[in-house]
Image (cartoon, rainbow, N blue to C red; front, side, top):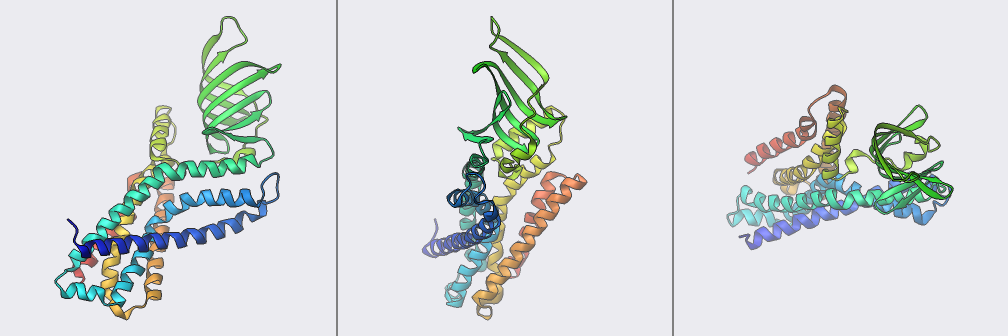
Length: 353
């Protein structure tokens, strides 16, 4: 059971972390809105659509910023307790550094679960909806509908589950219209743009213009060509924005077809590493606060937290890109920064007095 002091510390840390997350998301919103402002006025993309699209994309930004936000927010909140001598009083009544760190870890576990839930169930649909808002304003070439995107390619109407790259689609269902009647339905798990046409891999074709209705399988089926890859750039889905279960399912498809799944494996392990990094960043705040106590002001603590967060972020990006280029194992690329900072936090905790 948690004592009153434990609950107080845990709630203080959670409140500080969420406040830090809110500030980072607000700053990200401003910068991204400025970056996207030049697109306002094109087609049907107005101010309201731009604010909605950027606002929805902030859910993914919040998920990505969780480790850094929790570090900065918790460092500021614990630093405030230290400045008011509350941590000194806790030590005076017999609380060790380990006992103070325990509720911080509990708060970290709660925040890690929150980050995992956002990354799995909230951020992916919000990102797709943001892309759908932009797609709806693309002049009618692409439209949103249900849980996918719709596009017209000559006499074909395409329903696309995911745009993995401008020339790579996942979950494609194509409807051929002839004289305003449905003639064929083709479904394929993946499609690639090559040679000026879309190549549907492992396609299942249902012909409705014959009696009886025929169903045929094709290793590769070519269709369309009027829908160019540059028209789909606005709705390309980054592997990092997919839910973990979607990434896992697509990795299975790629490996079954002897295709490279490196960036999807990395994205899956990053999904695992992000909640763990949230706990590690919170654990790191305890020795940082006890190491400075009153000698360090709130501004200095926040600066230190931002610097540590930036180093962690840049190291993550560097190892991720290096892993893809040099073929490093995905678990190593994704988890190495978290393990490194976790080791530093444990060593610093043992030395804290």
